[in-house]
Length: 276
Image 1 (cartoon, one colour):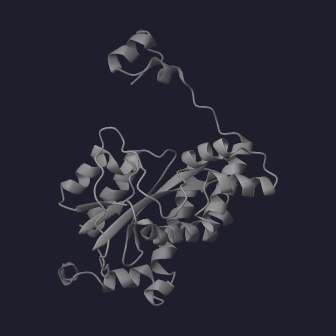
Image 2 (cartoon, rainbow, N blue to C red; image 1 turned 180 degrees about the vertical axis):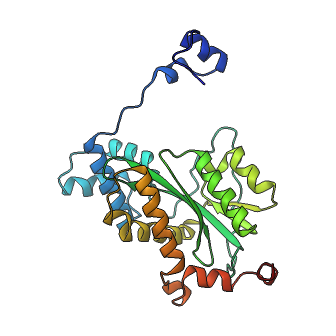
Image 3 (tube, helix red, strand yellow; image 1 turned 45 degrees about the horizontal axis):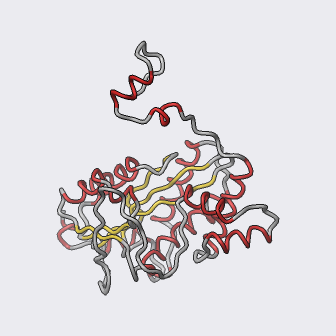
């Protein structure tokens, strides 16, 4: 990578590495306090009203005294990874060179552990700044199998969480994600292909299947994140890990007839897996 102290000029280093000189000289600016406040409020409004797009969010924010335009709201939503949740035609643009896979869950009865896993990313506000949380979730039991916290929405922390879940809990029949570039990247897809896992991606008519992950994010934020304004990334990692352990082992779910995710997950594992 670029070494700013090397005797070779930065322009020559950029040429050898085939990277843009503009990207080398660019230094990211910290997010302003005003934008952090907006992002925290957008996050809360999205949890309450996940159907809200940039236009409606702007109107709601203005009613609360925020001076903001629709384009800036859209910019912050993109930075946070927030999208309105509603039924719409497939309009997601494929990342150049990334294959998008068909949706495999339509009409499928998901009733047992390790039948279908899902993965998603959410924005986590802190006292100053923010991080991202990625989680691999067993669909039937709602059990969080693995998670990672990162300061950026890159592929690496998603792949690490996936590989941990596979190493600890075996192989699901189907793995479902949205069409985000983290999940369509070759590095991520190769992990699934090597194990013969069916690859499913949300598309037209699949909007309802995001609801259970949205409920997980809502629980994480209202029962943990909003109660603890994390001062550091390490504090966020500790707090989120503690809460997800509680979610798995002690939090009963009405959708599981009052069982915890752990209780449902281990009770509904295939017989061969239990025997092992």
